[in-house]
Image (cartoon, rainbow, N blue to C red; front, side, top):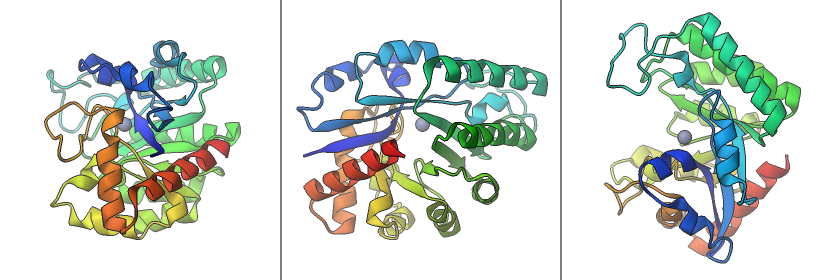
Length: 274
Ligand SMILES: [Zn+2]
């Protein structure tokens, strides 16, 4: 069976003690056709580029995610949380410049993950929007697709997509939004990517949502090391576990898993060719 993983974090997965390389080394003879290693911070590109250099089937994205707005100014800093430092707008603008330099030097294939996260409420909404919209504008300037992270921010993400596109569209990663977001994204040439939370039995809404995605806009992902699919809950997620999400999606869609693998792989190739 042919398959891809549209969204994963190699570095974080390695940090959790999973040797992703043993799986990547067997690709593509194990069926795995490739995917995207996702950037999260303004300065993570050099190390990731080095790490994945031996794997041309893995494309790289780079971005400042909403967490780069710093600790939540409404909730206060939690010293145990990964993002425990407040950031000034000045610092954010400096970091955007560092990221811009990395784009010029490393030429990543996508801008992502970018977006809004009102669940963790990083920084302020204004700071999150500054980071998000700056990179949406870059996507138009550079002619790149974006990979969007949206948590509890459907309305503002939709508003941004309507205003800023970008022209080449992109992917709504780990889709967990409402029907309006899905419609808006599809109208603006986005793919909809589902992660391991699709396999959670009580997630009936998401299972209904995947039925509404046109077959030529469907992608699947692990978001490794997070969101491990059923029946492997409790383990650290890794791209090789995506097979469980393919099985689950094929069952919901009432189709053969090999056929689904072909479709998603083809969709991924079309995204990469944009
Ligand atoms: Zn991610």
